[in-house]
Image (cartoon, rainbow over all chains, first blue to last red; front, side):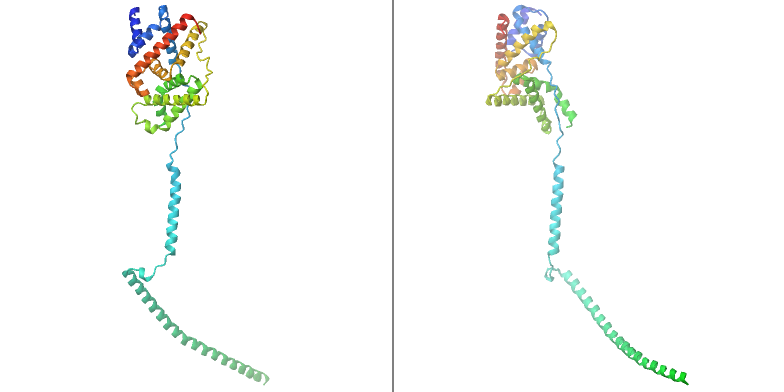
Amino acid sequence: MALDNIEQLLEKYDNAETTLAEEAKIRAYFSRENVPAHLESYKLLFQYVKHTKQEQFTKDVPLQPKRTKMYQWISVAAIAVLMVGGYFQVHQMNQKTTLDDLSHEQLMAYNQTIEVFSLVSSKFNKGTDNLEALSLVSSKLNEGAENLSYIKEFNKATNKIIKSE
Amino acid sequence: MTQTDFVKLVLPFKDKIYRLAKRLLVSNEEAEDATQEILIKLWNNKKKIEDYRNVEAFSMTMTKNLCLDRLKSKQAQNLKIVHSNYEDHNISLQKQVELNDSLNWVSKIMEELPEQQKIIVQLRDVEDYEFDEIAKVLEMNETAVRVALSRARKTIREKLTNKHNYGIR
């Protein structure tokens, strides 16, 4: 590249009017070994720039994947659900339902059940009445058994008499 | 977004973040810390990143803000970020020593620039950004970017010429 050409470019460069392509041209020019003495300062600058471009970041960066916090909250939510459930359970058990709370159909069913129960219980009582007769018979039987012992005694006595004969 | 996706996304510009951070903070370690912080911030907000059209420009803005904050807080504590990376340019060849020295001049001259000009020079000359991209990163208009860049380039060259001519270090 001609010298006056590069000087023009350098002037534009100093005024920050060069494009990136033109700057690349300048850099290419100054990467040569010999440049005119009055441009030596530019050469230093571009050498410095070339040098800095090669610097690299070599340090390792610890990248930890962020744990999603959602999973941690699931246990909390589960416990909350359990507590609420337990509370309602206890609440329901403590609550007493009266006849007034029942609906019409429930009341009918209740009454029918009660009727059936009272019927069963009256039949039961009749059964126990009949049992009383049985117990009378058994007491009479016992009385009979006591009378039998007399007969035993009598027998003994007759046996003795028969032996002595 | 998985870790590999993220690395793929970040890979093209993580060095740029580092270099910009180093331009502003000077020290290698500070720049590494800042870069790490930026990358972790990006990773933590990876869901939001997917919506951004230009993640790189966004990250560069983040880097700029973080580094300026750092500088400000360090100044408020009356502390300066001290860098110990003097052996940074490890070109071992004997004939490179002189050049190496001159490169240090340039970096020292760069350090003397105001923050904003540092960022602009870094983005334009080192990272080859277009003016509209720089304007986006810095949240200023293109003309202002051009003016600041021109000013910075002239300052650098003036100082460099002086040093070169007089051989003063």
